[in-house]
Image (tube, rainbow, N blue to C red; front, side, top):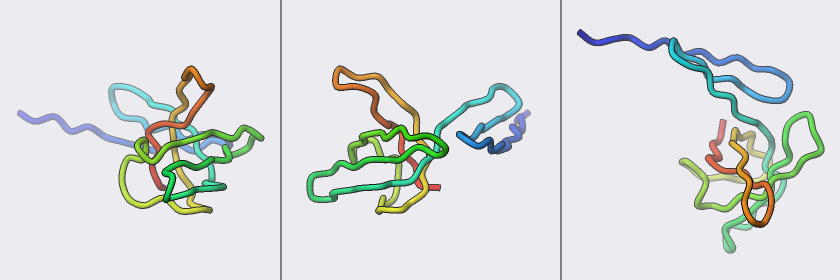
Length: 90
């Protein structure tokens, strides 16, 4: 017997919540402010805050990222500070 998982998306001013029957995952959203495809990095301006996040092209989940794209992402603490990972175009 297969089980059906229901997904939903709840938007708050600063982030989205992706929910299903078993858990809820929060991820941040923002706008790509700068991206250099030759060097493979850019910056995301988080929605509703002044926080800017560095990201590398290797953390983009799928597709092509361009300036002014609205994206979701997770934040991760690294030895060089907080960065955006799991970047996905919305």
